[in-house]
Length: 370
Image (cartoon, rainbow, N blue to C red; front, side, top):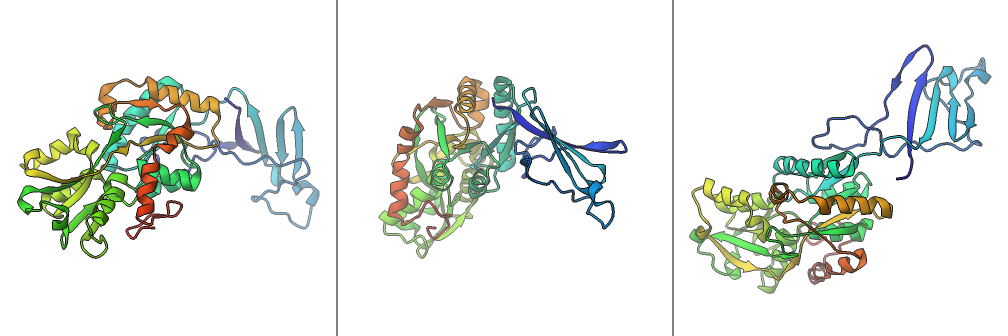
């Protein structure tokens, strides 16, 4: 692991040591204060380091001019007013936390709790802190990754493709479905009592999508509508539920006549519980459309991460075999895809559907196709 820069600001007159700032953004379940892995850049000897706390005055200018001393890999700047800023490259410093992001495929609070169990398992295998961040939306997770505020992300298939196109995301593992497959489907569901039996019956009805960056919850249902000669902008009243479980809930409560959902999540214990809580069974729900197979989601990292770091992270995921942890996240486990380039090609089916819908994946996706 490469050495970690750290910065400590000291002041004269026994001023307390100030702590480095942590990463921006909210990280669920964060309980410890850790240094930022992106420290301030070290100025070159030719640069003058200025103090913001002690602006120069007309007298004793030479005392307020900052001096720079470099000693054996340690840089010390003497700021005006007696401030001392110390930078060092320490081979013994603790590695920075791994910032692990999730697209909010289901309720964010519940997902954060489930994700924390996985983070704890990864920490025990890596010997390194793992911080969880569940995005406010799929787009939020993509942009947080693009801002380099996340190191590793549990991407949905379409979110991965968008992050790849926009920010060079690198897939390292494929998630298996809840029944151990590398593919799943998009379902369009309705209650039997709506008497909706085929796609054309959706016209004039309220329809629940999941999120604009969801493959099974938006992209593939839109494609199915196009093939059924349904204009999703005119022929239906589309809404975004914000999660697969929430889309199902809208169908259960009758707030939407029909809705889209991932087959993988529909098979989960959470969705079965939702049905039972509202006095329904699976026999009360009708699937009027099943999509072609969709590749499961990716575990992806930043393209600039070292091969050594990526290898360790990959091995930690593959070593997680606690079925209780995995099943709560609607997966049977992970599969090592070998070449990132070859694995990326397996998502070409998503790119093809986006092309058919005139969606530019290098731009933000919205209800009207981006």
